[in-house]
Image 1 (cartoon, rainbow, N blue to C red):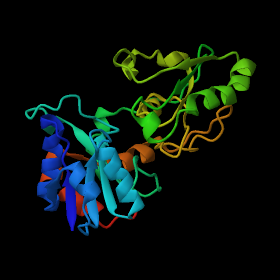
Image 2 (tube, one colour; image 1 turned 90 degrees about the vertical axis):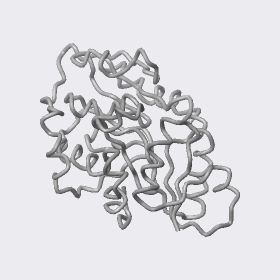
Image 3 (cartoon, one colour; image 1 turned 30 degrees about the vertical axis):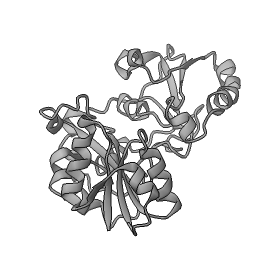
Image 4 (tube, rainbow, N blue to C red; image 1 turned 120 degrees about the vertical axis):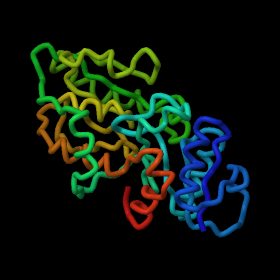
Length: 264
C-alpha cells in the first residue's frame, strides 16, 4: 500500500499529484500519515517543510520504503508554474535525502541531455585561492542536527588554508549567491554539506568534496590537497538515472524504474 504526502502548496502539490497518479497511490495530509496506523509500506515525500520532514523521519523509523522528491541535480526546476513544469527534472531518491552513487549506469538517460551539460576540463590555476564551504540550509540544519557542522569544518580546513594561502569563503544558500555568480577560475575546491553546488563544480572541473553522509558526493576526488579526477560523466549519468520529468512521474515511468531498486 502506497501513499503520497500532500504539500499544501498549489505549486508543489502538482508534483505529488503527478506521482500519486503514476504510482496509483493515495494522496494524504502529513498529519494523517504521522498519526495513522494504516499499514503503508511505501510513501512519496516532497521536501521537508510543512510536516513532510516528520513523515520522512517516520518512514525511516518504521522502515517504510520512501521516494524522496526534490530539486534535480541537472536541469532543475526554476518555476513551479503548471505551464513550465514540463521543462525541468525532479530528483527522486530511495530511502535517502540524496541519491547514492553505486557505479552502475547505462548512460541512456544522461545521453539525452549530455549536449546541454558540457563537462569542462579539470582546472586549478595559480589564481585558484578560494576554498568554498557550503553549510546546510537554515531548514536542513535543525532537521539533520547539523548546528556544529560549519564551525567544525572550518576548524578542520584552516591548517590547509594557511599552508596553501587559501581564503575560506562560506557560501550560505541565498538568492544572491547562486552558482552563476562564482568566479570559477578562482576556486581551489568546494566542500559542502549537501549543496547542489557540488554537481555544478563537477561540471565546471572543480574538485568537490562532500562534508556529510547527506552529500551526493563523498570521497570520489580523493584528498583535497592532491585530488584525483573521477569519471565525472559516470557520476552525472548516475544522477540523471534518478531524476525525471513531470510527465515521467505522471505516467508511472519514474515509479516503475525505482520501485524495485535497493538504492537511489
